[in-house]
Image 1 (cartoon, rainbow, N blue to C red):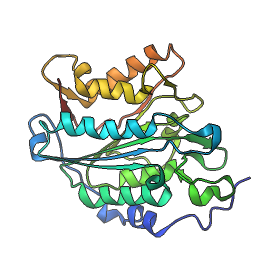
Image 2 (cartoon, rainbow, N blue to C red; image 1 turned 90 degrees about the vertical axis):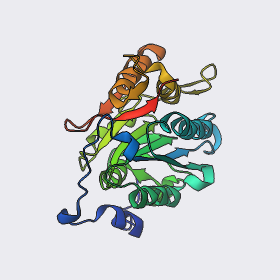
Image 3 (cartoon, rainbow, N blue to C red; image 1 turned 45 degrees about the vertical axis):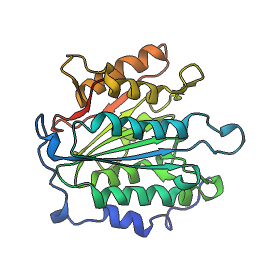
Image 4 (cartoon, helix red, strand yellow; image 1 turned 60 degrees about the vertical axis):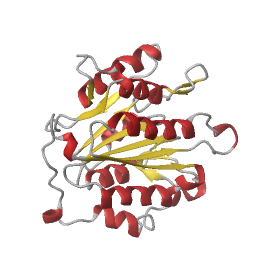
Amino acid sequence: MRPNMHSFVTAVIASLVALPAWQQPAWADYGPGKAEQANLYVLAIGINQYPGKEKLEEAVKDAKQIAESFRAHASGIFRHVETKVLTDQQANREGILQGLAWLRKSAQARDLAVIYYSGHGGVDKKHGFFLWPYGGKDNHFAKTALFGHELKAAAGQLHSKCLVLLDACEAGAISKAQPEARNVVFFCPCRGHEDDLEKKNWHHSLLAKVVLDGVAGKADVNKDGTVTLEELEHYVMKQVKELSKDKQHPVIVHPRDFPTLQLAKAG
């Protein structure tokens, strides 16, 4: 049903993932009080322009607002916040790989990288979870899709810690992709067989709405003026279930030894 994978790996992917063991990133411990020494890099990807009925309404806006929200609320936590937003034509397979390469070059051991993807996703019987970049074609599936194992490997090869917000249908299936990455946390709004909801009265996808609200301060459970990764994680888990009326069940992939992170100033 799908083209053979033998011509699939590109030079960009090779540069991201084909590192010998001695070059594996040794990212630094990162806890409260250390964030002011770190930089934040946000790669936000949003795709509305899919063919016909596949077109989305909120993905581009969500990507732009996620990037702006981190710039606004994380500036009081991090020394420097830099964002790169890829929308529609910019977010084809090559463009996304170039964005990942930018993170690989920019984010260093003490830094944090955030990757947000809003667009179509799915599960292929042969290749597992995949993202559907702009210009993706069924008859050139292996050359135009971006597979979960590619994204996971690229994020895992960053020198920094990484938070991936995967705003797509069946996103939870990324948990089955290899290799494992001890420097990466994944937030997925739904399990591997569930759809990701958009509603007009939300003006966002469900994950984008919850993350935007959480980063702005609603996730600050202990009211200390900062939003931590753990607080945002708990907020996402609770709010996605409630707002979807139990139609979506978030999947969080959080390595055991992942350090405590301050993400944003509340308010």
